[in-house]
Structure formats: C-alpha cells, structure tokens
Length: 391
Image 1 (cartoon, helix red, strand yellow):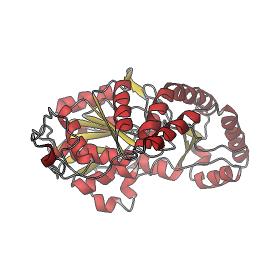
Image 2 (spheres, helix red, strand yellow):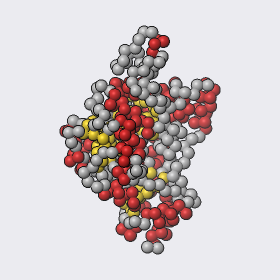
Image 3 (cartoon, one colour):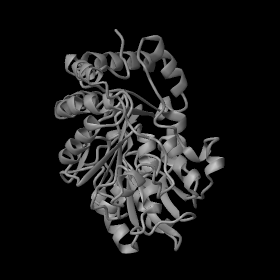
C-alpha cells in the first residue's frame, strides 16, 4: 500500500473547462478569472476577491496594497506580529516591503500562534497581527479580535493552508482587513497554480487590481475610488499610478477554479471524515501529540509530534515510514527564526521559540485527501506500532 501526500482532484469537468479555454484562444487573464473571483467572493461571504498566480503572491499583494492604500495605517518600517511557524512566503513580503516581524512562539497543541503571548509583545511600533491558520486549523479569532480592538491594530490573515475552515461559523480568511488562500495542487482546491485574496475594503481591492498588473489603471472600474479615469481611453492603456507587479493568473486557472469551487463542500466533508479516523487512532497515543482542533478545521493534513520515548527519534521514524511507502513532510518550515532566510528579513522576539523549535525537531505530517483514505490511515497506525515495538 502507498499513503500519498496528495491525490488529484481533477475529472473530465476540469479537462473540458481547459478545452473551452483552448477553443476560445484567450489564455491570459480574462472572463474566466473574473467569474471565478466573483464566485469565490460569494462563496466565502466576502465583498471582493482577487486572484493571483500563487498563495505566495497573495500575501505579497495583500501587504503591498495595505501599505499603498491611503485608507490603511501601515507604512514601511512598521512592526507586525507574526507566528514563528509558517511557510516562508508568509515572511518574504516583509523583506521586500521593509516591514519588521515580531515573532511569537506557537501553542504546541493547536500549532497556531500562542494567543496568551500576543498582548505582551505589542509595542508602540506594532501596527498589525498577521494571523496564520496552520494546516487547516483556525485561530481563536474571538480572542485575537478583542486584543486587536483594544490596542487599535489591524488583523491580516494568511489562510493559504486552511481554505474552508471556520471559526464560529465564519470562514477563515474573512476576519481581517484581507485574507489569503492558495489553490496550489496539494491544497483544498487545485487550479494548478493560484492564489486568492479576500477583502471587504473597496479601496484595498482596487489597489490590488492595479498592482496585480503593472500598477496600471486599465483594470480599475469606471467609478474607481482610488483614481479618476480620463475620458480619453487611449491615455489609460499604459497609465501607471502605483508600483506594481505582474502576478496575474491565466484563464486555465480561472476556468478550473469554477469547477473546483463547486466541489469544495464535498472535499472538506471527506477530509473531516478522514480526520475523525485519524483522531480516533492517535489522539490518545502516548507517543504523539496531534493538532487540537479550534473551530472547524478544514484538515489540510495530519500532524504528528513525537513525544516521550519517540522524542528525538522523528528522523528514524520517517525513514521507516518512507521505506513503507508512507510519504511525510515537515510541519511548514519549522521555526522560521532559525531559517537561513530569516537573516535577510530581520525582526525580533522577546523569548526563544521553544515550541516551534520542538516541532522542527520532532514534528511531521502525513497527507489528507478529498478521497476516503481510511485504509491508508490504518496502515499508518500499523506501521507506527511496528516501529514503536522496537523501542
């Protein structure tokens, strides 16, 4: 048996949608992307959605737009609180935008930021909290929103691993000024490559529309709130008002996304069913700590942190699992403060990242799927038991 990290979610509907794009002979960003954006905004109860070429670019454009939007109090040099455990491109925009990360350790149970440490880390320089929902698991946004309101700071959300997750029946990715999601192959829906940003701010949305494509005015609506267009249409063809990028998606991705979005409910239902089996087998296992669910997780993956006699034996265990056709991965990038790239980004922290460091040395994850993988999960348990008998 093979326990894979991910399985393809495509069927003939996605293939047909790509054939339609080929027949149209229109491949760059167009009507399919626009329709997918509207459908996504509606699905997640958000006013606006903008699609880009990756979740990484979604983080970049969200933070860039927050700096460029005159209605948002964020500037270069400002400090943003962020978890020490996440994907590298949660942090990369900080370098390019000259933002200063204030790292906080994670909670070993939830793997999300330790909420109890946020308030003591807020300074006069702190302008926002960049909340990351790790591997499908929501943060406690009731507590985070209360802290943000008390200290008058913004909330941004990196929800790239947690599409479809909910807290108090509200979708993650919609709690902050903006929220990002990824539609990469291994994520909850797949548009091959792709990222999304949700926001209820019209000005932020329009800034993103501009900077997604060169910083020009062409994609702005006629009644734009950030720029008054000239009546001379020719003068607006190459009119650049903001420092922009070219991080547009393509029509294939928009067309596929429309099909995938219709499947998302069922995808998450099956992921949740798989998670029930995983929790049944591992939540009382003395050799592991598994992720404690907050709200309604969308179960990106299944994390395992080696404890007790398995402490510091993670590498031996995953070697054994890989030899038995069970694919494994580190939990995100581990403690990012120890990453070589962190040197370029800078930032500071008050305390050592004890929990993030422990996860780096002792944690790993196995895959979840939109398919029934109960046999694979039982196989995982069987092989782990075989390994543990040797201890």
